[in-house]
Length: 150
Image 1 (cartoon, rainbow, N blue to C red):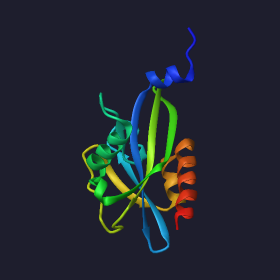
Image 2 (cartoon, rainbow, N blue to C red):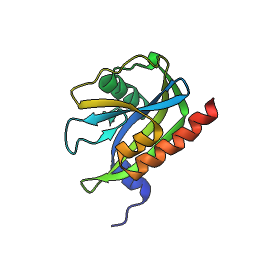
Image 3 (cartoon, rainbow, N blue to C red):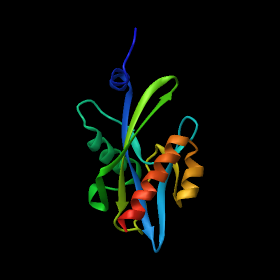
Image 4 (cartoon, helix red, strand yellow):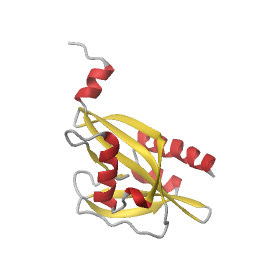
């Protein structure tokens, strides 16, 4: 039985979210949430795509549920997205992230019970905190994009 990459993507669990950043003066900070389950990993707000829901709708819903930010709170860069493919418990997973900026940098997130902690972090601290190479590379790529937005 041979599967193509596209067959595997179709069978994979799908999730979507937003990589949120804010500007505090000259500093760019990324929001990371610490999961209240499993290995208590840190990530941007994200979650599983519900049946009949498109990826972008999922990203907005999950960001509202997990961090309390709605679309009105954000500048979303619809053309700046990154797809990560990895395995969880030996099963393929696809996560689509869009880049989004918090309009009011002083508006604090509101955590759901899915997370135990949140932090706004510099690029290097965010990369150290997420730990996974594909997530670190995504932060680097988005950071380059943010620098060009200025």
